[in-house]
Length: 502
Image (cartoon, rainbow, N blue to C red; front, side, top):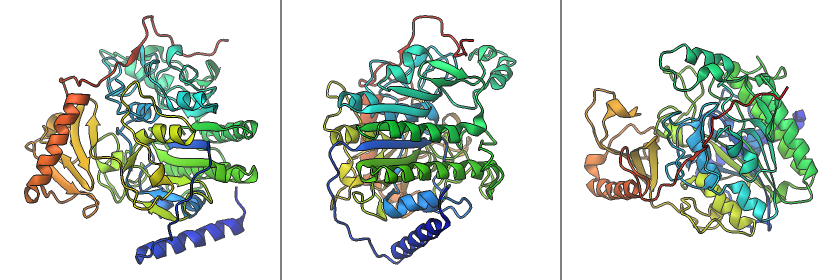
């Protein structure tokens, strides 16, 4: 892993930065222009909570590499995804759009999360980050969890990636789980035919069932190999890690299993920290650190336990709520950006930004542009990343959807929940028997969203209600289609399971 002296150095630096920020001292900010055509690495963890790593307040998990990343880079405290679950969140990162715009928020067979052998997937007509960067001459790879369609028409190699090494859907969608589903009456997910969990290279299953304990290690080793192979050309590496994931007992290799203070959840997170540390070390050794923008984030918040003092299913502290909802704990994710010598060390960005912004930002930094023949919801956030003075969030309004229902709207520090039926909405703040109520929270003054101030700010409620109606017209709401929605991909043949050829 890392030498002990380096662990001590980075821990001291990290603690000093925390002390400085706690007394209101800001790090001197001088924006530096990024190099032309930088490399990009995006590590997209699965279900990692806001409070699961040390730079965001964890005192339980040891994350020295992420401490280093925060000390040498930039922490984003209001970085959001567009859904509280896997598939729609990943679709937004790939396309720069709300999942409702690209049809990946819901389908009649799978619901909001794609399952094995689904006829649905990300429409091949959509343009991904990989396709945008490939057009600019970048080598492209995805190493990890795809979850945007497991049929050949939807695999990453059809969406701009030169290499796919990973699992085509969530690692908890195993053959055993499928068999249990098939025993239920009316199983619509064809669970009886789910194959052993496939590890794929490009379009071929190379191992089934794959060893889930070894996924983080194998993904890291393959990433390091691929970076070395492409060190002399611009590259984009998308690394959607499988961990800590959706299972009650996440997986880790022998070197980490049983070593943390928080069971298997902690073991998996500490191995993820080791993974990013190995990649940062390699970039430094290859002389690529200042030429590579590395982003660490998560697809949504942690599922957490009903007893919030039990952290064995993650922590979203100090935010309210759990993953799979429209709470801040589901949508706001722990995000660090690192490009030493270019990104200002030890700085913090409190402006709202989202995963949708990566496509237009990367496109511009690579010398290209986001697609202009269709609506893209994301924005260029290079000014926020590189600390341009007075840079502000590009969002006038940001929308919180659960499947096809618009539940909340954010503008600046204000988040308003619409007066929806709690019984039908999995409402993060109201019980099922509560009356539909407008809720307004000031996210800076009330981090845990405990105080409804809607009655005190009718003008804010009016403004956010107007934004909500604009969203309904564009992106839809429940049974009301939006004018700006595009179609999910669907194959016109019988879908087949991904199985080893032999």
